[in-house]
Image (cartoon, rainbow over the protein chains, first blue to last red):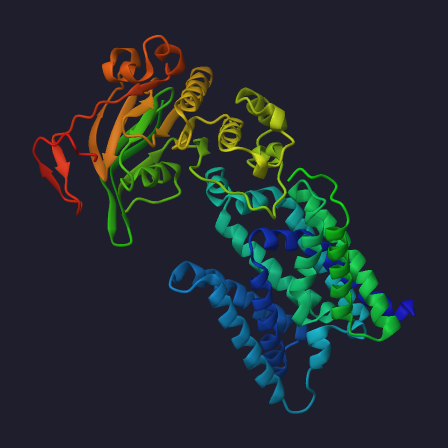
Length: 265
Length: 254
């Protein structure tokens, strides 16, 4: 059994480790909606990739990155629409066009259910190697620049005066998000990628007293959720993505019910 | 040492000309207080000095490698972000010992492990000051640090800033929220309302009769020794729509 599951498990653990700290930054910056936009845009990327015969993951990375950069530029230029409105328009437009594009593909169509909900059999050994290498590299980048990134998140003006390039930080976070969407797509599925980023971070809030603590706790909770979800998916034959998110959600509920470590905040 | 020089600086935000023809020089060891009515452009001027805004006209020249400490006017840390006082003060990358020393110096060392969201306004001001000082800045910029603080709180804060200036020789740019009450140790006071209306030095409290009348003879020196009155002297007046007309207008900044 393990020889079929190990690519998905290993890839899932690597992505969850990265999703911990990155998810925390998104929660603090209230960018959860941003994740949804990128994942919906990824579907458009998949469809266009299939139509243009571009390799799946590459197409998704390209589509998500273009949206990330596009949003970054748009936010600086227009004022009459709130960011959440803009993101909602973009997310659902991308999803709609993506679904239409997929439906007109003749011949081999991408497996929509697997893409939307994840499928552990979808992850090949080669995928796993690529995802693990990529996720660990991105995690190293995030750890290396954690302090200036967090400073920019807490108060942008102070960070700028102290020498942090806050625009570069915003772009970096957006691109990291785009890449996580591409890596996590096969494991958790496009519909629930944001949940893998947000739910473990939300669960970790209760016990953390420092930003760094919340980050590694979120990683651990995410990794545990991947193990639980993949197991449940294999044993009960339920879709992988929802199983992982349901595990994470259970942990979240437990952290709310159990007494907090300190009543200090 | 000259830290920052503003020459003929103007700033346009949207359709409004917020600042025009501003000349300002900030030197080490020198405390400059900015006063002016709300909407006068004080915070914009501070942001220009800090490099957070670029001027539309004129020039802002900073000494090379200038290290600036900044105390912003408002700072809200979201409840989703767990953050201790020590960690907050260390976000600038200053050495841990410098941070701990700065927290102790500003009188909030005992709060190092407390969550920043649990602090009172006055305590948080001191933490912000500690974060700024831990970097050993050459210039300290404080944006209305005593807003919402009573007179004795203001006095204590101004006393601390004065001591820090004496100890480190840093320059200070302080934005006062009050038109008439400024830090007694200010070396110069600049009144701005889109342009420089007047400038001068503060008067000592003990000399000013109305102040003594308000706070009493015996208490005045100690409780308010760091607070002084600035008397405006304007040769023009501002109309509501912004245009300036010459003439004896004592109410320039009203």
